Length: 241
Image 1 (cartoon, rainbow, N blue to C red):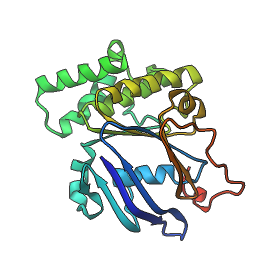
Image 2: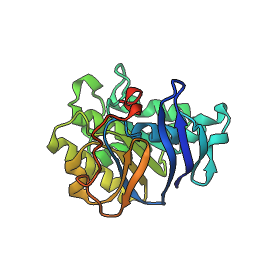
Image 3: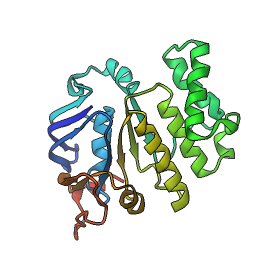
């Protein structure tokens, strides 16, 4: 479902964020992307939804080479990817229901199908009872669950998440990861970039470790604790939070 072939990315200021990365994530996999700040995790995810393009190499989503995709086709690519961010990115003036409906209106989904999809997504994340609430009325965990529901409402085969528990307490973080586990059990391929060693160690899924833009470890049933910690800051940390 996700494949990177000899991918490198150099930012305009000369900083090398990724260096000759080869990676495959199969259909139905659940994988963690780990590493220190500046290791290249967020850069790699941005390549998948074409916020960035590689300097060298190829990126494939479900067998399609997205590095050659014209810009006007990028919105169609993003309908096949669910993306979850650390800062939620919910529309503040819309209710939870309206946030999800906005995504579907863009793709001209019929009203009856829209109601069905939104109800299913909110039920999956346990947030149906908050469907008429605005983001500011929700806790951090509820906002993240709403963001996950929004990412799922188009039934994408792939879900990528960039630090989805970064702003949450440990108990809430574990609840979010349990939701992602349930989504994966339905067949969705999931790739999560995270610093959260507790959830990585507790779930014992595939772990892909990056260090200064290179994959240094890729193991099934891995842990965060064996991730190499660079004594010196990677140069890419200048451009990546």
